[in-house]
Length: 532
Image (cartoon, rainbow, N blue to C red; front, side):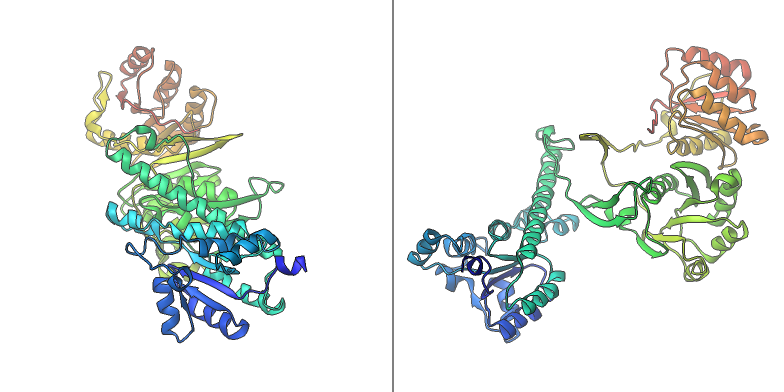
């Protein structure tokens, strides 16, 4: 008998939804098949009644009118008592009887669309009005009492709930109710986190306490699982991918890109694609970036992306094989033909769009993933996170206005206008190379790169070796200052004619002297681009 009371047939259902997808059909099935009484509020009640389904307005249950523009309607003992009462506790049930509280067996609620309201650019007042109070309260009450109450937050779950009720004589299983309760607390935590982040941003924008801005005392990220991955960096590591929403320009990110074809993305694919997509967005002109193991092995700007691809591939065709690519313009059949001509195996390509003929051509290579972002924009995620054991590091994203007017020519040799253009290209490209980073460029194309080395001189040697004869007459960028002149000498002795770097070393004078001795133009930017 106790078990029967803990798992009652579902007879009274409370519905209050913002997303009304499927709600009428769900309500009809509950009433027609299981004889449920539907209790509902506002627009949800109207939608159900308009479909000819019997519905009891919430104010008939509470004996209190909805008021204050709907702000107050479900916060009532006859609602929350019906949700929270322990069905196997005689005293709970006696108190419910004494106060005319009937049990509610199922709650179907989804919340006001607060995040969508914020992203739409709505006013502060409209955003405040879209902070749901009654919805989260009902969800939490029902979820706390999952031993007896079924709580549903997603329209996608309606079908499975009905199927289980059909197989269990109008009931749901304890395991299902427990899982649904977990969904509730995950949902409400993310919802409150989104409100907290938004409110902190508003306060910071108004000049309030900086602790409520980008780095508050507590952070709720509101991550949503997008997919389970086959494995992590290595096959023995489990992995999953989560999305972070609710910030400007989120639509055109890798996380929200539309995969047009190919196998599921792997952990390493996501890392490489993210590096490539970040790098290619540094350029306004048509650009291509090829990445392998988080390192760009080809970066090029040209008159169109096909020409940019061809030259980026020439930079290091051995490394390009099996890498990923990013374009900042739509990919056409012409570009795909160039890739096929090089017989280049590509793990994945990310671009704003893919033309119909490009998709048709790549359909013959179904293992390659094609991802369309739908557009290109400036990075909008102001704060980026990185995990360490037991915590997260947070920092403002490395987005600096690269204004050549603020650069300083450090030595006697003045760079030509063409060399300065090349230096700016190289300076943007070196951002995507792991520190210590050196990148050599010629004619708006990388020709050699060295990175990830414990000392800068070895990075310079690797870049020079890769560039070969192309280093003669080329320019170079260093992501941080030269601590000694030896790294600079390696570049100058290979034929590099201009170098761009942050400056700021206690030995800057030694490097400036080396530049003057070797007739190399040296430009200081005043800021560095470490990438660890």
